[in-house]
Length: 146
Image 1 (tube, rainbow, N blue to C red):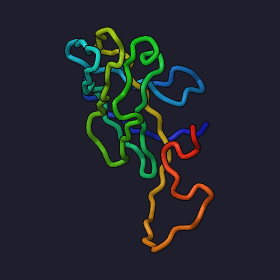
Image 2 (cartoon, one colour):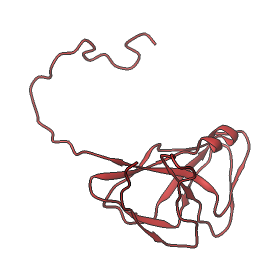
Image 3 (tube, helix red, strand yellow):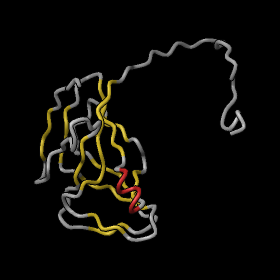
């Protein structure tokens, strides 16, 4: 598996992201909190991670939910996946939401999300009067009957 160098700055005392298994696609992000807080059903909050990264040009980081938190507690990310652009140097924050039926306590150091690095391409837009035809055409949401 190819690796890319990611410079990381610890902003608070928090565990650094790490891969939990040899073939894991994402690293776990940890909450960096001065005190734990309760996220009630339907509430959302920005959880700081205590880290900032320097992503190489041509890459992005995607912040995604952790499946165990989603399954057991209904904890998801509001904007999933969240994108961290290569030119962003601020603290990584995770916008969590409680879709569960019970309050969920977020504690300092808790694994709250995962981050995956991906190559990305930039588009060059070319304005035209017509677009090429396809079998689907302009068929939108639910156009196949499913």
